Amino acid sequence: MEETMENRTIKIAVVGPESTGKSKMAKRLASEFNTLFVPEYARYYCEDLNRQYTMEDEMNIFYGQIAMEDSFLAVVKEDVLICDTCFLTVKVWSDHLFGYTPERVLEERKTRKYDFYLLMDIDLPWVDDPLRDFPDKRDHFLEVWKKELAEVSAQYRLISGLNEERFENGIKAVKDFLKRNRATFSE
Image 1 (tube, one colour):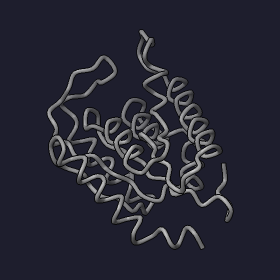
Image 2 (cartoon, rainbow, N blue to C red; image 1 turned 120 degrees about the vertical axis):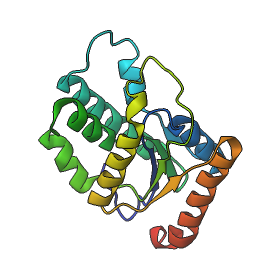
Image 3 (tube, rainbow, N blue to C red; image 1 turned 180 degrees about the vertical axis):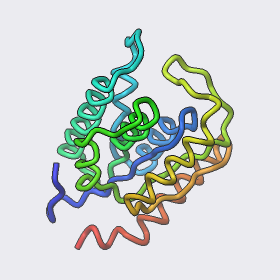
Image 4 (cartoon, rainbow, N blue to C red; image 1 turned 135 degrees about the horizontal axis):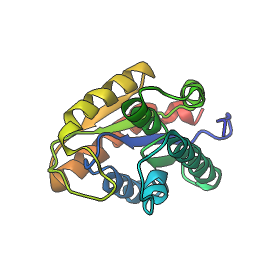
């Protein structure tokens, strides 16, 4: 869904390595800012996937994530939409698992923009989950995310802290971003 002057929804993506509190942060931000959040499509897709991931799975997740995001953008009444991850996760996983990114994902990276990212730090303890695969590679994936965000010239803030402090840091980062940028989106 291409953004027009009439549709100036501010998109904030919560991204980062596995087991860093992305989903909890997205839900908390949506509650704090009285808006919707787009859930992570991969969780639904992989829930009953009892085999190794394939590139076809990654592309299905890619299309599912952007379709969900577009459908939420079409109905959100507030000027902010929170995204629990974004399609760039497919790039990160495709590169890691298969050694390349599909051209369709690279094309989308040129046009689908997010206004602000919260990059979740790896300071939380690992919580095992059947959908998580790499507890020993979180530092690697944090560096990968920093590189990906730099490549798209993203505005982002690294969010650290435990328990309530983490949520407060995320909320403050979004409030600071909105304070600096909201007027630009309402012009």
